[in-house]
Length: 490
Ligand code: TAP
Image 1: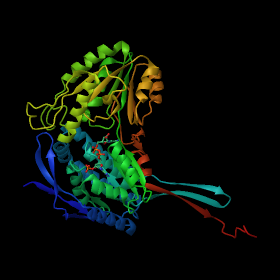
Image 2: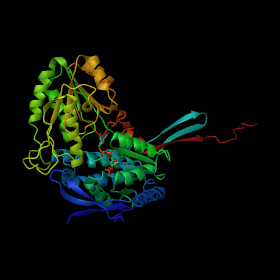
Image 3: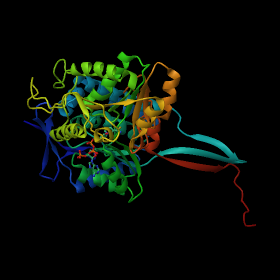
Image 4: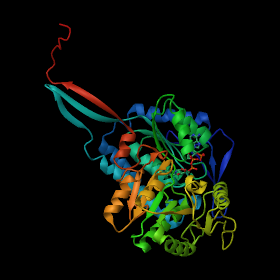
């Protein structure tokens, strides 16, 4: 029988009054793998109320950092024990390869452990502000954190929010993307087995327009952390104005990957492939614009296309698959539409461009690695986020032009530079207006480094110590060490 995914409110798995359910599909073959309940507005409000009551009772916020760390480590251990299952569920529901899913699952465990470790550090400052006045700066949890997650990294993006929000003593309400709830449900099953008090963590499946919007608008939610598209992010920010809740937005990108003529060509080609085709290009930080210096452009393209042609596309759980499925039929259509737009705009389609419907991929959503060359900055395939395995390779003359083209975008999420001249590479990367950057690499990152974008790519930072601040209030306490009248009106 198909598994039914229930809502998790106030420490219980519960039904919804909404008779409508969401079929959860395997994008590699369109098989229904589960049915998810869809929370109503009232049920969303109920979950928020439960989170608020748990926060106000102090069952979690009132625990010592060491006690909270212990629970985070418990959750990490349980996730580690279930690593294979988490990875399999992610592959099944999102379409990514098992290798990618395993790496996400391992990083999720690391993330819980990292925040547990941070809790053992002193947090706060105290200083003598004036004679007999000692000032303390303390950090406090915000209250209820609304966490809204996209479908491209359903597990890792959930954990990137859950771990710092819980570490800092908040209660949470998590909404996964409607089409990819499988791993979030598994994480909550593990949370349910841990010592986290009831009501602190709540999980709601359902639509963005009902559940997501209710979270963003609720006056009982104190901070909303959202990862998703720039368009929806704008709406979240507007919805948050009612109670002026804190907003953390991780949004889209159209990131430049600049390859200079003095780069190690093999390395640059290799990372430029990894930069866009990892996750089938459904990665916010993808290097979807490769900028190559004129003098090596043709050689680069030749090598790049030859390597891209060899990428083995296939079901994420099939032996040898290097690039998995696109998450949904709807998203696949949107990518194919962009490929058509690219052709009509006059870009040269150097590789791919079609859906794959052979070799066991007949029923799934698969797209060939697609390479456009001879593109210009005014083309929509260069300006808009496609969020698929489609790369645009553009020419530049010199350093100045590379920087100008790189920054000619509304986004500012990521960027990279390839050159053996480290001084030049540093000079250029410092001028790229983006929050996540690399020199002679792409996509490599770690939980200790803040993640987020400039410009329309977002506000605030995920992971690292920065993420603690996203879920904390800061208070100054001024202590009079020698209480006597101030005599201001004498
Ligand atoms: P969105 O359509 O923006 O959806 C993201 C989440 O927001 C989903 O849970 C969605 O729910 C929910 N949502 C939709 N409408 C909402 C509303 N009115 N109010 C509140 N929540 C709402 O993005 P997506 O298609 O899932 O993901 C792709 C986008 O995310 C890309 O642009 C990508 O760049 C971006 N992304 C960015 C990052 C970082 S770190 N910057 C990471 C991953 C993805 P439903 O699923 O129910 O619609």
